[in-house]
Image (cartoon, rainbow, N blue to C red; front, side):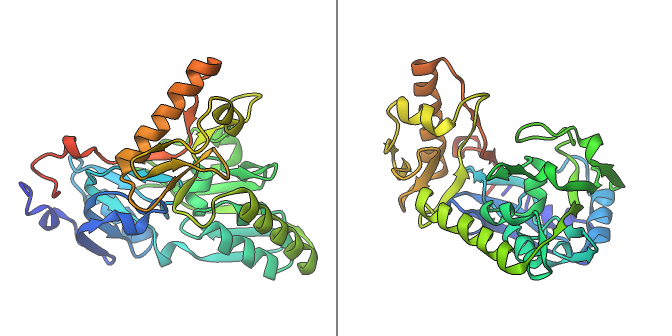
Length: 310
């Protein structure tokens, strides 16, 4: 590495830093290169102080639980941040739930159920964390996170805290206008009183549908492409003849063709090439340009500089 002292450039924190971490074990695709530095902040204040004191020349990347993320084979230079236990708190007050952005959607839905709160069942069918779901306005089963969100707490790149109401976030289909440099810390959500048994039935129905309709037994990143207005991405992909299409160790799922799966030997490049080939074929067949729903981060191997390990 040409920057052997990067760890020495890190400010004092109460969390922990790890060097040269293979990210494939942190992504649902089970692919990805090395994070030069992986940072696990202890809590909000620790993260704020880190941002206030880190050199602005060092690139910063936020990595959630890796469910809808493709980390490229060349890895991620600079510092990659993951939110751990200090960002997984949950508080319930009446029909409101305040939850940390690092909390998994499934865990959030289960806690709501255990407290007799309805309206969050759809989250049990969305892999990932609350923070990532807010960023992309994740949705399933005719409900989106924006339908239940009241407000969010974010940390700006300057290290300042801000409270954002739902109105300020300008949610649209699978996106919001909050700057990419801001980190979601927590959110306050709206729920309604319900019966635990009925809530459990809804969650079971969602679970059963996922197992039947989606490749839940294979490494995947969830839905690959956003549904274009008035269309379903999977239908466009199927009609373009892409079901089962394979490049290297990556395949368009036979079960649900808006999912790309890792057959066991895929590289991130295989997955990205396959996705781009699907985009090309759909555009040629229908004139519609599919938009990636999976977030692709990091660098390709050929882009790896002297400062990144291979």
